[in-house]
Image (cartoon, rainbow, N blue to C red; front, top):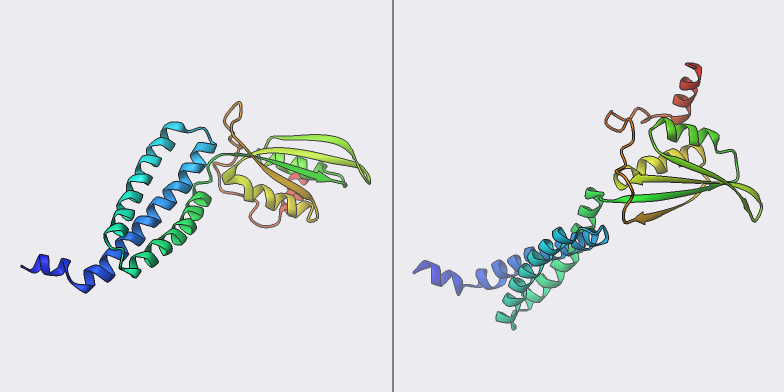
Length: 203
């Protein structure tokens, strides 16, 4: 029969089995990354289901390794799948952009234009005047969705290129964040300062 002969062929032993192990490792490592993200957000039911799928795929992969202990190609595929799965997991995490972040900005200069523009873009902003080692500073707190982080950083760097800022993960907030005009196309894709000037002229 053709089927048993294929199972004993070199193509099955050195190509198909390692390929399946490689794919399985990508899947289970990627799921592991996503599971950790959901655990940090307190999503216990989803995390548990993902963990079940993750360990099931891992058992199938390690089972094939144990059945082919003399096949060095399987070891390479296992390790390669782990490396590729790590990369894929990070990529998926970036694309999911799940969660809420706190951006803290410290400025020695006047922060009024930055604060006005952030408010204009629909972000909640808290400004605190404090005393730094070199004099008065402004500490700005902005709570944003992870998916909006790059937009906020671009705004900060546009107004204050040398601003010092930190980003901290937040497990939960008292209410859902939804910037007022994020449902529309971003209208500050070009020059933020020019847009601010146009807005002021319209007053």
